[in-house]
Length: 258
Image 1 (tube, rainbow, N blue to C red):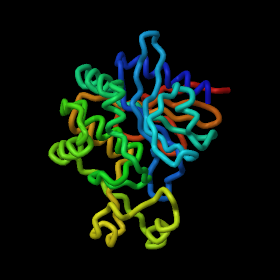
Image 2: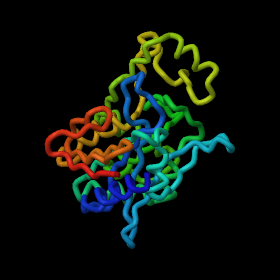
Image 3: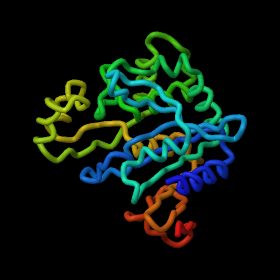
Image 4: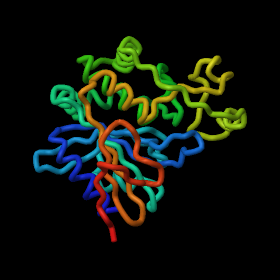
């Protein structure tokens, strides 16, 4: 994992950017055809080191928090040490600078933090928030040049509506999963529209929906996807995903771990 982190570090440095969108595979969501579960803002310090600012749920405290984490720690958040994925979206200079400024404006970044966490939070409700929705609202603050204030989340969500931000619905596929939300502490449905619940299609902010929005808003953005298995790291450029199982195709760079 440390060798994989070194390749991710190299890819970040090669972007020439001061801040990027970074996502990792984490919880296994393959049953929903979802590769990435967690997004953050990676930013470069004056000494060249990279860190990730992100929302995480502090289980012991029972509250969401903001957390700055070194790159190795962020990468090691991948649950499967035998197969993992990281996605980097490098932004045009002006967009990257605005995002870095907003992310590191700690009072404003904290003002975007909701009091309650839900892993499947609805993007246009103030009731809950998940890690990817915090990133979305931070993008709104950065690119909408929204000033701080008690209603910052409300204004950020309004900006996203008007942008417009339209996350692709997740097909939950089973009423059993809807029923489970009554018993699983970090899953909630009381913020979702009834029509979405009945249709078993929930709109949720995911790394894929964040990336789709960034690509639409800033078409000059570039995507780099990195994956590893037990033998190699594959570095893949472009918006098309790398093959499942971390299989390289023509033009991909391969770094052997043997």
